[in-house]
Amino acid sequence: MNEENEFEKQFSLNQRYYLENLDFINWYWYFIIIKEVICFKPNDILEIGSGSGIIKNCLKPLVEKYIVLDINPQLNPDILGDVRICNNELNNKFNLIIITDVLEHIPFSDLEQTVQNLFLYLKNGGKVLITIPHRRSNFLFMTPTQKPHVFTVPTGFLSPGAFYRRFIKRKIWIDPHHRWEIGDGKIKKGHLDKIFQKIDFKTEKFKKLLCVDFWVLKKP
Image 1 (spheres, rainbow, N blue to C red):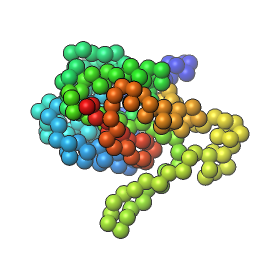
Image 2 (image 1 turned 45 degrees about the vertical axis):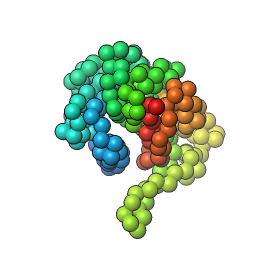
Image 3 (image 1 turned 120 degrees about the horizontal axis):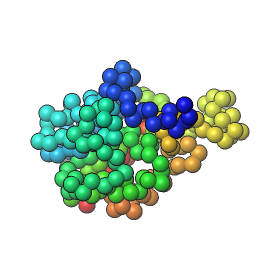
């Protein structure tokens, strides 16, 4: 089976696969995302790429409408579809969109159109929560007041192997299920910010989390 077929296999994985592969890092992301949503108090949520379904199960009881869009029929989404293709029936329907660890699975060349679709789906004043993997070394520490913080170092500085891959071989390892990642030697955070600004999103919040960058974007 060739590399492309191996890549496509991920879009037929069932929910049990995602549940069995949950780890501490996933729960750390969920904590940040769920807290952000609770503080915002949306009425309508669109989640794109449900994976384990944990976020949906936590938030669905708190809102009037919770819709899941996914390209994987094994996850039984409310809407079976490709995030890159605009669904005009969703325009101006949601206060909040959650799209975590999804955008890196599509070609970077499709990202601008995809972000434009998210903008269209939001009501004015609506927000989108985005996480995208950032290839770097991460350190989690707690303050004396029990608040978690992340300290990061660019990949290639903490081990001889990583140094060799980045500076000698000039090939940074990324997850084989991903088309690209921030810090992969080609894509930088600034490339994402430029696209968000072009679409007219306003960055309300940005955080470095374990293994990912996290944005809260607002539609004016």
